[in-house]
Amino acid sequence: MLNDAESCRFKKIYIALGYTDLRRGIDGLAQIIKCQFHLDPYDKNTLFLFCGRRTDRIKGLLWEGDGFLLLYKRLGSGGAFNWPRTTNDVLAITPDQYRALMQGLEIIARHPITEIDGSRLLV
Image (tube, rainbow, N blue to C red; front, top):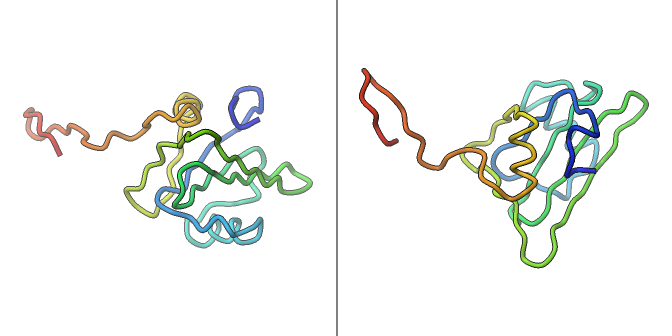
């Protein structure tokens, strides 16, 4: 289910950057969404993804209109998610970024190039 965002028809996909305590259940994750990120956990067909310190497992929270669906994925044989750890914030991602993340690819560059006054600088 988590490998194919298009077949699930997610309206929006958010990832919680940084580390999340994956011992939290539905209520704890919904509280993070509401209080820390100021988003609505009851937004139908919106997937919220969380990753703990161990990058081989993630949790997802999805409101289906009549109840929450708590998803848990643990990769086998040394696999890992390339999870952005830059800040403790939330990031909306596209279905393409979601697919890349599920394949273990990096979706946020570690050393982005920025432009200042037409000059390219490595940050």
